Structures are given as structure tokens and as C-alpha cells.
Length: 296
Image (cartoon, rainbow, N blue to C red; front, side, top):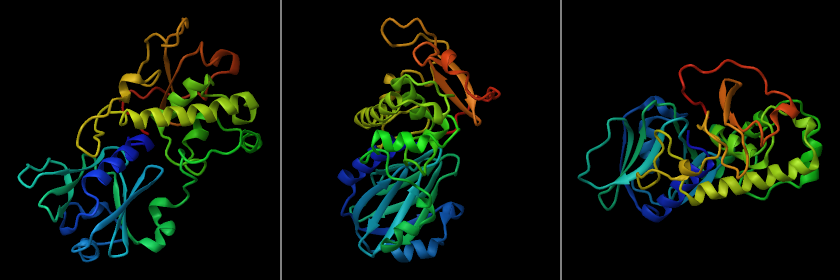
């Protein structure tokens, strides 16, 4: 689930809490989650080295060490990364433990074990499998509206699918795609080639606003997400459409009721009044996900 705002929150927390700490031990409890490396190689590369920088690209967290190696963490659905004291009990689903010089332990916790850890030389980060195919970070300088309009004019996929395309802008997942479209008042099933320049400008503005506000609120906790301090985020209290099926639209004066459909096996939430869904045509048909499980 962690999308850009959640990973950025973790990055900011860890920079404050564990930057410049030395790793004294690495305990790998789930080797299957390592990408292109072994527990022994991870230990050799990191033990005795200092964590000197923490970066991010889209949904990927990047830990850079004084040894010249970087550890790329992709949280996927249920990943968490936060430090605990030396006497704290380890959560049941702890997958990797980084013991720090001051006795604390940096825990990688992942209930479903879908996340990954990839070790690469820092100078070769761009070639890492975790970052392959990623476009510019969604919080970086956006494209100019007319340039984006021309690019969209050649695509017939829905605008919701486009927002989830990590090769366009990295970091937007299922939750924030619904929120961005609600903010921009664009129907999620509208084809990219049908967007007007006014809508493209609204889309760009909404993307930056929603992501920035979610970072300020320390992310959205719906189930497993935890910040870099192990706490929950608060943006779930500000969601306009996501997870609100059957509830009234929050836009003042709007009589709409939030609806839910499935696009490409993922839930989409929208207001049919604010987002003009009936005028724009219905989103791509799909079956409702009876399990209720969300796939960012």
C-alpha cells in the first residue's frame, strides 16, 4: 500500500532518527525478499558502515551507506521500516533487523512478504531492478500542461490507468489516483485522448496538491502502513472518495453519493456528480472485488 506520501514520510523520519548511525549487525530472517543478493553479501556490504544518506524515487526508499553501497527498499503492500529500542520485543512479521551502533534496531516488517530489499553499488543505482522503468518522481517539477496534453492525445487508456503508470510519474498508487481525480473533477474512466487542456491543468494541480497534503499529514493508514516512528498516518481522515462508497460527497453543495467500480482489478472511488461520470461515459467495466482487498 505505501505510496509516495507514505514512503516520503518514512524517509523524513529515518533521516531524523537513524542517519549517521553505524550498522553493527544484519539479521536476515526472510532471504526470499532479497533481490540479486544473499544474506552473506548484505552483511559484508553493510556491517561496520555508516548510513550517510536516505533518498527516495517514487515508492522506493534508498538507504546509502559509507561503504559505497545502496539498499533499495520497496514496501509493496504491507512493508514497514522503523527503529526500536534494544529491549523492545520484535513484531511477529519482522523480516530483517539492522542493529545500530547505539543499540537500537532498525526493523523491516512485512506481513505478506511481498516487499523487496535490493543491494547495489551506489554508483549503479540507476540500473537497479527496483528502479527500472520509473519515470520522474511525482513531486518533482511537473511537465508543462501543453506537453502533457500532446502526450495524452496519443493514448486511449483511461486517465486512472495513466496515473498508475509508473513510467509517467513515479509514486502515485491506487489510493491517490482516486483522490487526485476527485480533486480535479475528472471521470476516472475518461480516455486520456479526450482530456482538454483545462482538465490537464487541473490534473497537474491536483496531483501536486494531494500528494503534498498527504505528506504533511504523514500518509494514509488504512491497514498496515506505519511511519518511520512506528505510528499511523492521518490523511485517511481527509480522503474525499477513497473507501467512502455509499457516503455523501464532501464537496459543499454536491448531492452526489460516492460510488465504487473496478478498473484493471483495482477499486476506483468517485463522485458521479462532481466528476461528471455520466457525461463522460462510464469507466471500463469490471467485476467488483468481493474480497474487499485493495491493490495499490
